[in-house]
Each structure stands twice: as structure tokens, then as C-alpha cells.
Image (cartoon, rainbow, N blue to C red):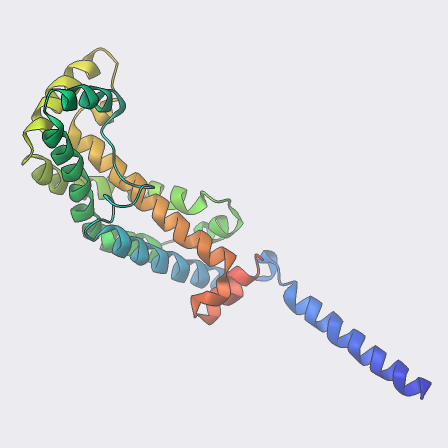
Amino acid sequence: MQRRQFQACSFAALIALATTRAQALSLGELSNADASSGVKAALEQGALAAVGLLGQSGGFLNNPKVRIPLPGYLNDAAKLMKRFGQGQRIEELETSINRAAEAAVPMGKDLLVGAVRSMTVTDAKNILAGGDTSVTQFFSEKTRAPLGQRFLPVVTQATKKVGLAQQYNAFAGKAAGFGLVKKEDATIEQYVTGKTLDGLFLVIGEQEQQLRQNPAAAGSAILKKVFGALK
């Protein structure tokens, strides 16, 4: 009787040990192929999800995390202008710049996917081992410049319809000459393009963080394996 109990206990201990070892898969034990495949799948999934969320009506305008405000000093001036009956023009500009962002984002889908598919094993390992901003840093380094070039004409076309944008550019251009405005914000088009990129990278990062927290929900064996190793 005691021998059976001992055997049962030993068997249970072996099962527990095997389970512990299986759950202890570490980043270092992942093969380069698994790490690269998992990160690429995660980032492509996250990028496409972010484009889908932001590239629709209200994607920026109705999302307080990424809604693009008027630049600080212009926002202060807008409060004064509203008192003098210019509220509608201010709202038109705010709506216009967010609609411009929503129109621009889908045009970057292929650049984002291309950056993911061409990433190296080192890129993948750095993202897995990196912190909460590792994904944002990757996309910013690889795609910010080309995305900005692609977004700018779309943003320009959308904001040109609003007369106040011209007033902003005239004012900001002078302020930039005195060092009061960053060069990249010297026109409403550049400002909106920059904020569009910030919002896009932010949402991509959020998508990736959700995957880290709950890899089982990914519906992909490689994603579960790679991100499960980080739990």
C-alpha cells in the first residue's frame, strides 16, 4: 500500500517537473527561425489591425488617445477665436486634420508590411527582449521617413480645403523663424503628418502589447510559442 502511494507520488512529481520544464521555455531556447517567424507574424498582424482601426471614419477623430489637437499655442488662440464667433471654423480645422490622418493611414499598409517581412533575426530578437517601446522604435526607424513622404500629399490635399490652415502656416512659419516652433511643425501639413505617424505607431505598439499579455488569443501556434516564452 505504501509502495503504491510512493509510486503515485513519484509519478505526480515527475509530471509536475515535466510541466514546469515545458512552461520554462525561455527566450534563449527559442530558435532563430521561431523567434523571427513569431515576431514577423505578430508585427504584421498588429500593423494591419492598427491600419484598420485608424484608417476608418472616426479612427483618429473619435479616439482620445490619438486624436490630433491643434498645436498648443494655436489651441489657446482658438479659445479666443471661439468667443468672437469663429468656433465653427476652428471645429472645421480640427475635424479636417483628423480626417486627413484617417485618409493617409491606409496608404502606408504596404510599407509597414514590407518593413516587417524584411526584418532580420537580430531585429526580431531585439523586439522580443525589448521593452514596451521596442515595436514603436522598430517601425519608427524603418518606416517613419517613407511613410511621412507618402502621407504628406494626402494631408496637404485635405487641409487645403480649410482656409484656417493657410493662416496657421503663415503664423507658424514666422514663429519658426524665431525658434518658437519646431521646424517639423512649421506647417499644418507637417504637423498633422507627424501626429499621424505618432498615432499609428502608438496603436501598433498597443496591438503588440495585447499579444504579449495574451498570446493564446492570437490563434497561431508560432505566436503562442514565441510570446508564451515571455510569460
